[in-house]
Length: 227
Ligand SMILES: Nc1nc2c(ncn2[C@@H]2O[C@H](COP(=O)(O)OP(=O)(O)OP(=O)(O)O)[C@@H](O)[C@H]2O)c(=O)[nH]1
Ligand SMILES: [Mg+2]
Image 1 (spheres, rainbow, N blue to C red):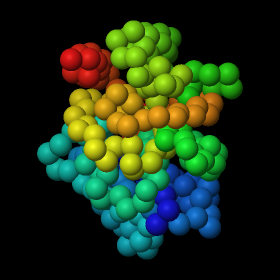
Image 2 (cartoon, rainbow, N blue to C red):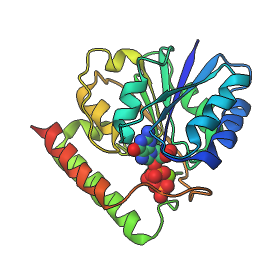
Image 3 (cartoon, rainbow, N blue to C red):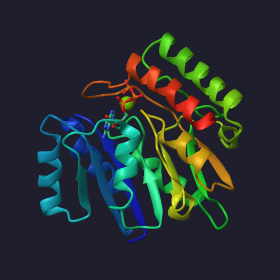
Image 4 (cartoon, rainbow, N blue to C red):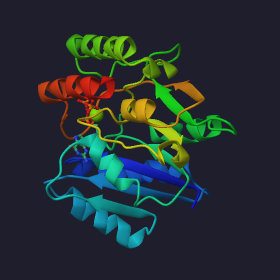
């Protein structure tokens, strides 16, 4: 197993099939697995199990009580089997056809590759409305001011990235909310980071789970990582 792709999902029933197909097309010929880190309350887990019956590369870590993107990813890490880990949203806002470019950038000596909305060639128009774009810029600025290690990348709040398992092996990851990359940057053993630009497009199916609660969680996480 060369590559483990961890996909956090909360009620993404309509997106599971298209995502698995898109990853398959992008990584045709590679030795990979997809591990869904699922907290869904809809039919998403049934769909994932069904896909897994015909495609053994598709597996799931399902929580019935948990909630939270970042802890879902952390809990899926021991389930994943490869040394190279890809984290990607399950709603297709992160283009799976970019995974090969991220993997190619993860050459010898590179610990982490971040798909960045905030470098030349990237964009964030998928954030619904100007208020979310502004909020995204403000949260990034807050991270830069409060957590120096977040400056390793142009997009420390991206949810689309690749890392070597060794980076988190000795790390006590205790994230709150959404921002798993920030947690790894601060608590992991991250040396060299490479950014690759990507365009964040609007969600096509199902609903957003981001909201005020996540804004509050973010402030709590910043505080916890700082102290
Ligand atoms: N396991 C798990 N996954 C979650 C949770 N909340 C969100 N997700 C997943 O994490 C990914 C990102 O969540 P989104 O709601 O799309 O957040 P976003 O992309 O910032 O918001 P939109 O642009 O509105 O889609 C999606 O694949 C969600 O299904 C959660 O509590 N648990
Ligand atoms: Mg989304």
